[in-house]
Image (tube, rainbow, N blue to C red; front, side, top):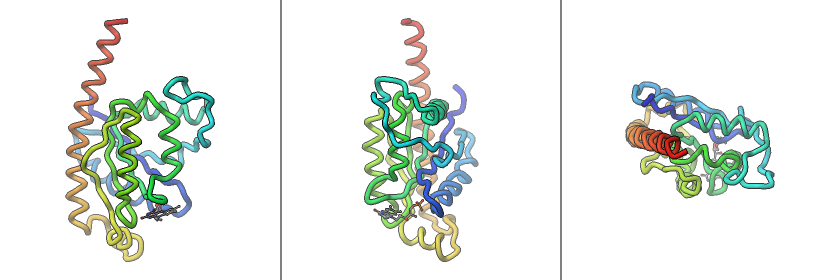
Length: 200
Ligand SMILES: Cc1cc2nc3c(=O)[nH]c(=O)nc-3n(C[C@H](O)[C@H](O)[C@H](O)COP(=O)(O)O)c2cc1C
């Protein structure tokens, strides 16, 4: 089995966003591991229009070219870390839109989380977990929550995420758990693919 490849998704796109900072931080930590490969993915690079397809992607391939490019990227990856803010107690609409445009490509892949903002985006991450289950993904238990103090410390006071020991600790726990699921689910997907090929 090749080394599982994980996409670290910057899930906000607004001008002046904070999101690229925690994404770069977790990317720098993650890159030190040898059991997983990582790629930073910016939703700004996938400007998919609001979902308007006549049929859900679960039942018919999506026609929009930008969404097809996004689906191809999702298909290449073996797992995800969604780096997300909380917008009005849920996930940013741009993230929901990119989730809705793809279906089969998400299936049986793990998802971990880095949330940031007032409550460390706890409500958004919890909501995201339940959305991902509908896509047959496997959300991890551990997540990194960058709450008000580190959020403002980095935003306003020139601090680094690494100044907060609990963030480094939870990042390690989250990555360890993600690695287990990424390997296990990749093996399971590969075994199913062989079974399907034999049955065909
Ligand atoms: C539309 C909008 C809604 C927001 N709603 C919440 C919220 O429900 N809870 C919260 O803690 N912060 C909320 N915030 C504040 C965000 O946590 C903060 O602005 C964060 O930096 C947003 O991520 P971004 O900078 O990557 O866009 C909201 C921000 C925006 C722009």
